[in-house]
Length: 154
Image (cartoon, rainbow, N blue to C red; front, side, top):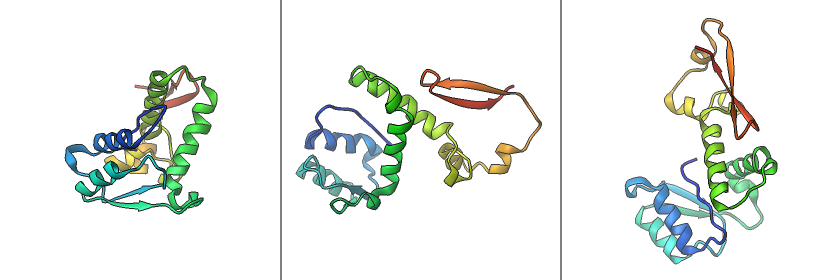
């Protein structure tokens, strides 16, 4: 995950600004997959073109075309938002920031050999994570105890 933001009413200007914020130093991604929503207008297309990003539109009613994003959004909903009463945009932004940090830095992923995306990015090997002297494990609550991060105690 590179960037997220929250609004009640996304429109072309808001989505365009989100694209600018997600692309550091005007270096956009090579490809960008999006649906056919009206909020992606001419401004969005112009910024994507300026970043030399090829915009790929998903087919109508084809969630498997963007399965990675759909899987992540499902995880956010099931593991986080279904269990918390959101009190406003600021509260939602804080909750999502904490969940995003947990998802990338602490939550093991089966597809990554029970490593976290942060460990894969850093190039840590699974054997380096598991092997070592036995130690006590400490549990750190995340999202008010909804999830837990586990670390070896010092």
